[in-house]
Length: 521
Image (cartoon, rainbow, N blue to C red; front, side):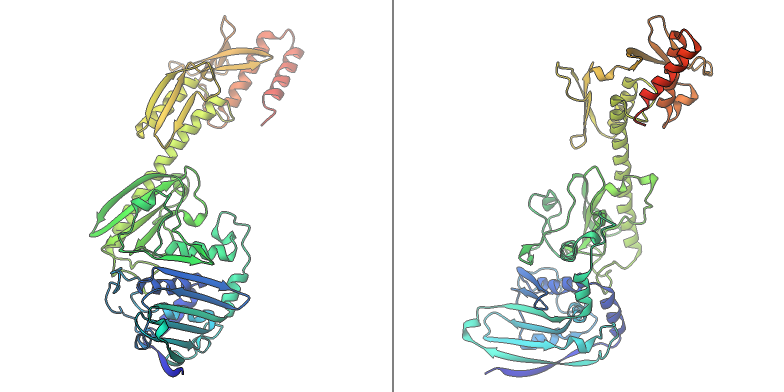
């Protein structure tokens, strides 16, 4: 026969207002994260989250150490201070929870919180129902935060002595929980997590903060491996959760110490904008747990660091900040040491944002010039390519020059960003500076008149071979946006002057060639 018992939730009145405030400011994923974190601290190797909106419940089951009836009473005390040893009893993990408020965080999201638990080698299994709806109203105002009675029962069975687990069920989900799952994706922001369905958003947020492993195929699984005795697998709706990370090239990694803070970091870039938006910047972790959203540490977005949004990464605090974390565990307390750490990470981001911009601009500039796209610069293709190759070699790239083979289906210059290598195919036909006007192909040569200021009369001319000579110092040709447009207009005008027999013929030639040359503008 089951044995009945009663317990009480006890809350230190000095932190009641703070708990009430931050609990309601946090979302359902935050509260769920707190429950799973408790499972980690209980030496669970598996935690499973099952959401059944039709049955109006959420169940979190873990195979951790479980609780005795006496330990459950301690679990109900919200003291606002560190609780017990910093290492877990079975595996010696560094505990995630410090203040014992994880249990309180879930109360606003259901009418009744049911807890079932047992420990290994115990024949007792207890079940307790916490009247969560009495603790919080739906409008977020505390009703009674002093002492709330919890009704429970204990059953005994020799067959269950080998079991050890805790199962927490949210029964009769509250309005704020239902609103979370009923919320529609914000489709106007397709590159953000807010554009995803609620369950996918929940998966993302859990994977951002929980102590999870990277997928094995990710290089970060080795670089940022957390030295824990044994990890915990977390499953949502039957699918295993794994740490969020960005695909791409690892551009930087290392172990550093700043003002007594030891940390390990890795920076990764896909050489394009990181998506979703929330994956940009550096994720801070302490004891393998995510702390707050990803950060760029006060760097101003804009032209100065135009490739900052191409960077993603993680910084793991190994030691030095254990005592500098806020009650809600979503931010570090701002200390001189933390500010020094932030500035160091900001400098790393600035460095690689500049690097990505230099390399990308150089590579694109060569491609634009060689393919003759819009807004090419006025100058010799070879000269412009060599100028950009110099930029890349200054950024650590090597150059390999090879003879062009008969096949010309490859680009004249290939930039391998991951290998930091530039391959130049010598004598490739795309290196030739030519233009076709009036169905005739003409070579173009470039000169620079440093001794005199070029005028419109000398900016473009034909030599005795009929080739076009361009003075690249002519002011209109130096325009980054329209220089090539002006060059082509001057070439058309020069050819019209030399080949037209009448003013009418010149007029028609100029308009016809301008129409043909700029039809795609």
